[in-house]
Length: 150
Image (cartoon, rainbow, N blue to C red; front, side):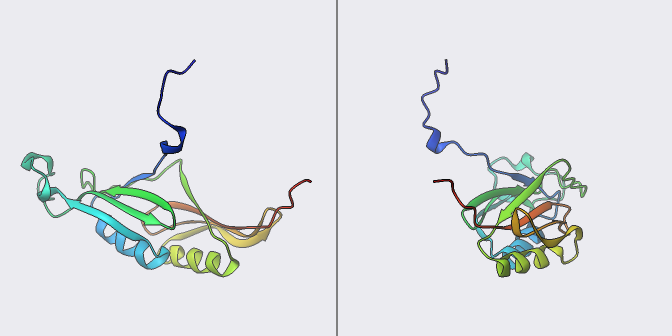
């Protein structure tokens, strides 16, 4: 039996992406591609601990929050090694219309690699998979209306 008294309504799992020195570029890309809104951004030089920044990375992003629709994501330059690796995970972006699905898929595809073209399927009006120019894998979907049993 769980003794945790935290309300399930406040529990969230949020992606934290490490761009290894390209976070600012990634945030600008997602602002344009996905209408993302950056809610906060701290640079290493803003830290009260001057030793927290990797050498030469004072102006890199230590932490940021950004919102895509109602989803919050976080991002950092981490150790600024320039070797961001996003393996074994995909972000799923659900949108209400075919038009939005096509717009976001095409925007994420710029400079990236289409893994599965955007197509109609048995479960979606449109569905496709793409790795954006930073290597982040996305599944973009405009779901079909589902009849609920009565």
